[in-house]
Image (cartoon, rainbow, N blue to C red):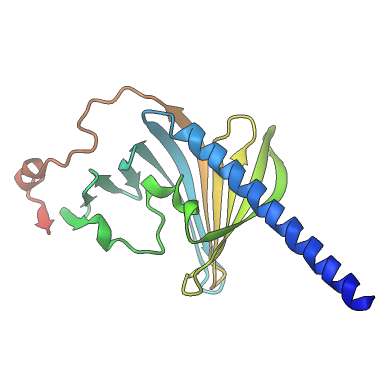
Length: 213
C-alpha cells in the first residue's frame, strides 16, 4: 500500500508540474504572438546589474528599436546596429566601430532581437508569482536553462497581464549576479525613416573613426 501511495503521489506531482509548464509555455506563446504582430517596437529601459560578491552595482538607461530581427540599440554611450547580417558596434569615446557577424555573439547573451524569442529553446518553464506593481498586475514566468554549461541559474520574465507586454526581465547567474531589465516605455508601429538599421561606413571614416572588421 505504501508503494502504491508513493507511486500515486509521484505521478500526481509530475502531472501537476507538466500542467504548470504547459500553462507557462502557452502564456509566453500568447505574449510572443501579440508582440510579433507589430511592425516595429521602441523600448526605453532601465538596466541594473548587481554582484554582491564583487561589490559591483550598476544602474543605467538605454533604448532599442526593433523590427523583426533588426535592431538599433543605444546603451551606456555605445550604439549597436544589427542589419540582419552583421552587428555594428559604434563607440564614440574611442572613435571606433567594430563590425562582426551575428554568429560571433556570446551564447550567454540575449540579443535585443531575441528578447521575445529566446525562451523557445533550451529552457524549461514554470508558472510563478503575481505581483502588483504601480497599479499593474505582473505575472512572472520562471525559466531555467536545460543546458548544464549555461552560466544562467534562472530567469524571471514579468508580463503585464492587461497588455501582454513584457514588463521586466530578471536574470540570476550561477555566481548569484543579478541583472534586471525594466521597461519604462513601450511604443509600437512608430514611423521609421528607413535607414535606422543601415550602417553608413563612409560617414564614420570621414569622422576619422577606426573601422575594425
